Amino acid sequence: MQHALSRKVVRTLLAFPVFFLSPLLCAAALSEEPPAGLRHERLRFHDHDYDVVSVDLKKARLELFWKDKHGCPFNNFEGLRSSLESEGRQLLFATNSGIYARDNTPLGLHVENKHELRRLNTTKSFGRGNFSLKPNGVFYVDDAGAHVLTTEAYQAAAPTPELAVQSGPMLVIKGELHPRFQPDVTSRHIRNGVGVRGLHEVVFVISRVPVNFHEFASLFREQLGCPDALYLDGTLSGMYAPFAGRQDSGLHYVGMLAVTAPKE
Image (cartoon, rainbow, N blue to C red):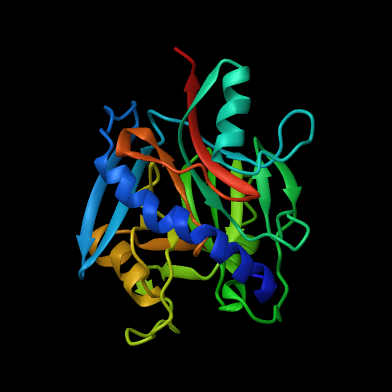
């Protein structure tokens, strides 16, 4: 995600055929019946199209993945799917998550199965990039449910999460759009993010066309009713959701948020 421009440009060029063709291919694919706890909507909001997947935490378990039991990164959805399959599990849904460093390690908080693999990043001056567009924040799930907080609020709350991922910028903060988002900004990219509607409903969104931050954040607040939402990534973003007609293989990711089930 948000680091050296040269690397980003290279990945963007590689990503172009995947992310601008795969939605067209997926639209033609027959979607499956949603698994328990998952729901898909294809929304059009202010002339832009989005895929929205909602996760009911009462019926489905959300997990965060980075490396397998041998310490090897999964890298993409196909790598995660294949690894899970070898363990008798199936991948139902996945999307990329969180900020990462040049060495392909999480650059911010990363908690899997209650194990903190990377600490909260509270760097005040972070140079250029989306994470430096303060406030940034944390999406996490604990015993009470799902939450999105600014990094400062998370640090003050000091929760004990089952999973947590840090990214930025915040999209919606207590019902208000990020103060620096402007509707006339011309910088548009494919974008994905996460929001919460109550303690037990998590909403994942990926745009099907390039959008700016204001447009993307407005969808969470006005259409989806999320009082808090967090940006995950831009052009590299992908989604694996066969029941929604999307089976992106994914590019080179670090963290991936996913829902799995025992293999039938």
